[in-house]
Image (cartoon, rainbow, N blue to C red):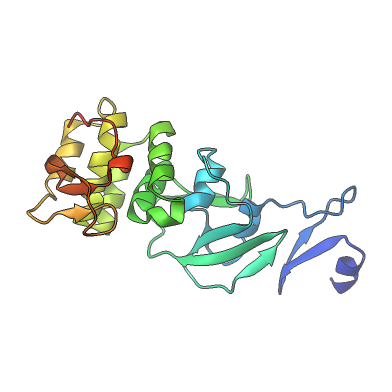
Length: 218
């Protein structure tokens, strides 16, 4: 291995993990998605990496990549990208494509739910809204199964609020009714608590004016 690395045939990504270099350019042939999915025994694309994989991004994270994994790994610097770990509590909603593409990636349904749960890992709420506006083919039962697994009132309310303008004719009224069933007297702040915002009474959310979605129909 050391000889192949020295001759430029291989690139050492980390201890015990190597990638082939392109003979014509000398650069690593594997892309950042494939590298990310080899950094642990079960690492996968989620949050902004998955957004990029699906081609839904407005922002470009060139030098930073947060990789989801069921186990920890040390940060890795490779091909100009810093890979760090985000621990995941579940393998629910992951598409296994290692044989075909060399990647594992969350389904579109889990991507939407996870990004609503942790907008900062997805590039911010504006990027999440952009994803929801562009994404196609969301399956209602898969959305609900992931929401039910996390079982967070705030997450149900955010899902109902942000999906309703774009998916009011593609998701059933029962989906939005279940989201609304998690509404209580408590108000949730989409931004920093205490700052002024628009009160969305139907969903008990306080939303910054600039992050308000188009009028919801449910």
